[in-house]
Length: 175
Image (cartoon, rainbow, N blue to C red; front, side):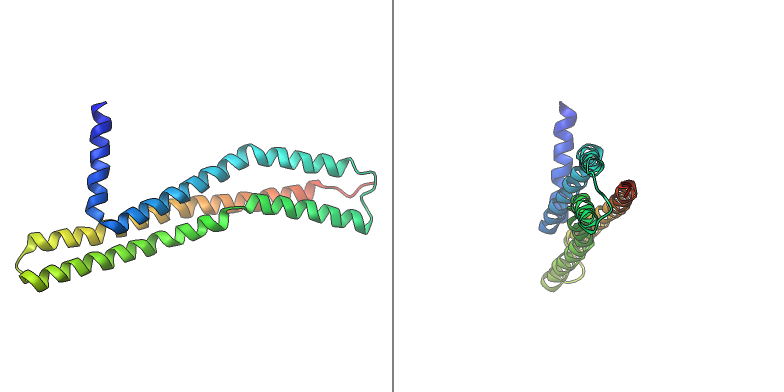
């Protein structure tokens, strides 16, 4: 139980070290990971059921060659594509926001350094150190958040496109 309290205090100290921008970065990263986990769960559960239902519906049709049948096929594939790509654009946006918030943290931290220099001169190194850490910690956090998201959003995008292609190929036009 003591390790939990120590961990909480370490996270709290880290968040205070980075200033208010680090809280925004933490929120963006948390939201990004919630959406990533949701997409992973979708691919592992709901998507397979949705693919099976679409395939069964298509195979259950008595006629599959007419123009109307092809339009129905395209509609089913489009709906499947929308459901597999849902949320990926939002994840990409959040990935792009992470380094921008990090840059905002850098700017606000450097403003704090310049304020200290204006008030006490450039000789007070301890006072300037707080501003420098407030400038570098959000930058690092933003980059780490972006890097973690870039890999997974690429994997999710490719998987979504591959599953749509696979469904499109599996809906035959026999009969």
